[in-house]
Every structure is written in C-alpha cells, then in structure tokens.
Amino acid sequence: MSAPDTVDSWFLPATELASAYRRRSLSPIEVVDAILDRIDRHDAQMRAFITVTADLARQQAREAEARLAGGDDGPLVGVPLAVKDNVGVAGVRTTCASALDPGWGTEREAEVIRRLRAAGAVIVGKANLYEYAFSLTDAYPQPTNPWNAEKYSSGSSSGSAVAVAAGMAHVAVGSDTGGSGRHPASANGVVGFKGTYGRVSRSGVFPLSYSLDHVTSIGRRVVDAATLLELMSDDGVRGESPLARTGRPLTGMRLARATGYTADRVDPEVTATVDEAVRVLTDLGADVEEVALPGVDLAAGIMSSIMLPEAAVIHRDAHRSAAELLGETAVARLDLGSVIPATEYVRAQQARMALADEYERLFDRYAAIVGPGNATRAGDASGWISVVDGVEYDLRHTGPEYTGIYNIIGNPALVLPAGFSSEGTPIGLQVAGRWWDEATVVQVGHAFEQATEWHLRRPPLPDLA
Image (cartoon, rainbow, N blue to C red; front, top):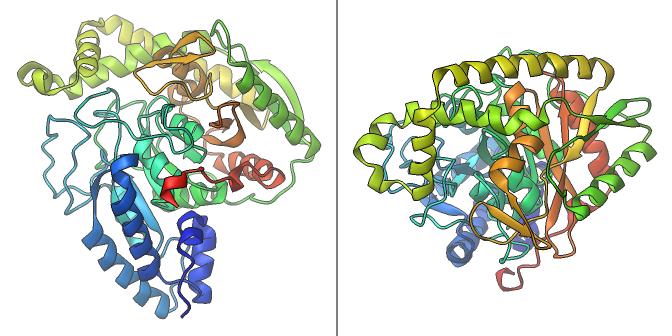
C-alpha cells in the first residue's frame, strides 16, 4: 500500500476518503495517525478540541481496517469524526465546556454515537463549544477561525466546524438550537445540516432547550453532511433518504429567496453573496422569487421566551447551588429564564404553531427557501457583538431571524459555502425545506455546490501546513 499524501488526506471529503479506502490507496490507520499528529501539533493554536481520544481512535481505525478487509465499504468506515462535547461518548468524559461538571461521568453514550460507531466512524475527539451550548466562558476559550484568526468562529458548535475546516476531522456532530450548527458552518466554510425536528434522536445529548434542540451533521461537502445525517436518523423516520434526489436538475423548481429581516443594516457583502447564489440557481433552471418570510420579526422574542425558561429548568439545581462555576453570561441568561412568566412561555409556543401554519402555506408554493446563513460576515473574535464596517450586530438578536426561525418551526435547513468576504472569511448560503423533505434541501444545495468552486478552497493556515 502506498503512503498517503497526508495534506490531501486531511482535506479529502468523507465520500472521497471512503473511495480511497476501497481502492486501497489510503488506509484508516495511516489517515487516523496523520489526523492525530495534526491535532497534536496544532490544536493548542486552533482550540477545536476539549478532549482528544487518540487511543479510542487508533483502536477504531484498526477495526475499520478489518471491516474493509472483510468487504464492508460503508460510507463512514474509517472516517475521522469529531463530536461536540455535549454529546455523550461512552468511555470519554463530557464537559459541556464548563467548569461546572454536568455529572455524566463516562458511562453515557448518545444514540447518534451508537449509530455512528456501528457505521464504522473513528472518533478522534470531543469538540469545543459554547458553555452548555449557550454561554461564553473563560474556562474554555473559543476556537480560532482558520481563515482569519482575528474573526470569530461562531457557535455553539464552533469546535466541530473548525475541526472539519482545519483538516482535523472529516465530519463532525454538532447541535443546533437556534443556528448553533449552521452559524459556525457559515463562518468557517463548511456544510452544516439539521434535519426535521424528531428525525435524529437527542438521547444522550445534553439539552439546552427540549423543544428547539436538533442534532447537526457537519462536513466538507453537502453529500458528506447528508450521509452523516442519514446514518444518525432514527429507524422508520418519515420521508425519503436525504440523498434520494442528489444530482437531479433544478429545472422548473420554484424557490423563495428570503427577505424581510429586521436588522437595521444587513451586511452588503452577505447580500451580494446571496444575490450571486440566486443567479447561479436561476442559471441551473430554478425559478426564484423574493418572499418576505413570515414572523422573522417575532423570532428573537419567541426563541428567548422558549429557550431561556427551558434552560432554566434544566439548570435549576446548578443555578441555585453552584452559579459561581458558571460563566457570567450563563448566569445572566438563566436569571432571565427563571423570571419569564409561564404565560409568556405558553404564548410563545402558541405563536410557533401559528408560524408553522404560515410556513406550511409558503411551502405549498415553493419547494425550498434560500437566503443568508447569517446576517453578517464573520465579525471580530470577541463576545456576542459582531462589529462589521463600524456597525454593531448582537448575534443573539440577528441569529433567531436568520437561522433560529427554522428551529422554531422545526423544518430542515442546510448552510453551505457560497462566497468569501473582503476579509477572506467564508459566507454561507442557507437552504430550508418542507418538514421531512431533506431530499429537496440536499438536491438544491448539491446542485449549487457542483456549479461553484467555493467548497474547493482551503484555509490559508501557512503555519499549519
């Protein structure tokens, strides 16, 4: 067997890596050793991982070798996987990026990890994140954006996205309550995909908000993320396989181009990127019409009125007895969640049901919605406030409009690379579809990806070569 080109193996899409394994031009043991060496040499700078599972990864790589030798050439056999550190992996401590231990020990394993182990994935580490997926903390500084270290890597699944973008894993598991898997996909130039609420089990994933949480798949290509989502999906789930329509043309497909956001000044570079993406989709045969999305002006209020009280219930004991171990932002948000009246929580749940009805009518007219993956290009790497061209954007307010709206109503949504800012940071395009119709979302995203070259770029990382 020839030695692998380690640089190429770092950045291969998962599907191409699986093909190289089948051809015996690469081996899981060599690839995993190269990935672990890369993490060992460079993660102190990138901060993508909280725990590196080198022994487990090498054991699973040997098992993958045996599976391949026995004719098992599944799409994830031997593929390096990063796992957000709010997702349980048996034998590995879960920290939720907090000084306050969640108390899970090393026994708990998420259902999605059970499925991915069975599919042959190789777990290389537990990835960094916002504290308990909703707070910034000094205990675990955020990962570095591999395209520009001065810009934020976003969150909360920042470590998962950075690991894939920086060549430290080929795919990753994240979570997404208001865009936590799709925002970092946009900021770091990878693909983030959440399915319909209920498609993927959240058992063994530390909750933030019971009724908004989704598990997210992250990869370098649309097909990679869709394959990971399919393998994580519960048995007997409704709808087609996410991959069922991959490669089909968009001729005659009606798409809605999302407008109507309330931000005072949407980043002009984001708008220009989406304009160009719409041109590409039109050239591919789609019929794209501008549509003001229903309820985006309500999204921040609805999300706060649901997420914060649910988080306050989940963290009730810790908030009362060990608040000093939580970050300042976490305490402030739990304080607020504890005083939101039950009437406001119920009204927010009623509003989300009404919104779902409005979007159902919208999807009667359009196969999918396309729009920005975030309000702005990646801002300065500090706090919740993103400063772009001298304008401050509070990501807790803009996020719900751009991505959180699809957590509120629970339909599938995908973010993929669509361009780059003047500062060299990625800008993502979002594609959202009908409930249980992940296949159309993948069809649109894959067609756009194949018609462009944004996904082929690698971060400069001159000192990581």
